[in-house]
Length: 111
Length: 114
Image (cartoon, rainbow over all chains, first blue to last red; front, side):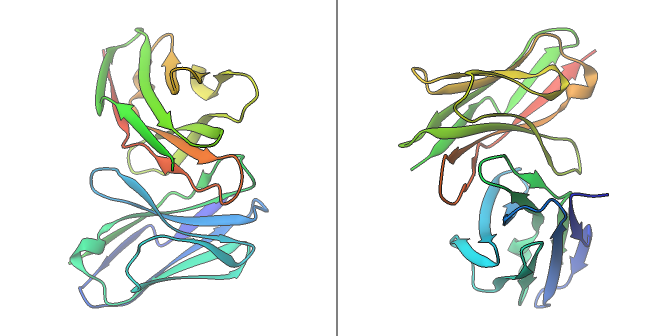
């Protein structure tokens, strides 16, 4: 029973397309996050939601739009995909300062 | 503002040798500190965390880390490396309240030699 599950695991798409990545957690955590990991393994926060409210919105192109229908779900929609969007995207959740629980990642390749 | 520096992007040790991965942090408020491990093609897994209780923190898989405020360090150690320890290790810092936004270090790739 996966704690933080992301779908899809792999996503290959052409430039200009629109795609979504879904994330669900069954841990009862209040806060969820999206992180981007680039080819050099550098991790950078993109967004965070606490109980469906956006609390962190880093400097991310507005082609990226998060949506949280409820506190167990946080989806990421990307419009007009570019080559530079190729990366691994991780969803995570946490409760207070307990530490993040990460999903297994979505490897996005834009061709 | 908070930041984390991991010294050494690649560390190689022999199987059975001591593992030492270095992490220094900068924080204007008392921090939470974490170590995560990432195996190839997997997500990050929490190894251990410091949340202002004991300064010596024990984690999973025989790892431990010591919080040294005077040195602003939180180095990760393991007495005896195992082949299965080969992975990428990340140190992270977070404020003790508010958004719990983690700042990750750039990672250290641990290689274990037979």
